[in-house]
Length: 102
Image (tube, rainbow, N blue to C red):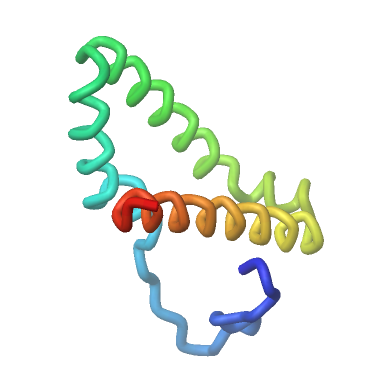
């Protein structure tokens, strides 16, 4: 994502299949792990408020995805992809450093 290497196809094939990628990312095992780790530091009310706000934000983003895509355009989408790639890289480095003990 950061280096500009593409692992996906830009063209739409004639026989496309639908994969519900948003659902495992939103409600997958990472979400459950995050909830368990937050429970050790915060009280349940704070976590429920955070989960509710996150659900509302995710719903608004998914509902208005077409509008956001038109608003940003192709270059904006490319910039967002690189920014989130950088964030993903930072999270991976943090997890690696935490597990190795550096």
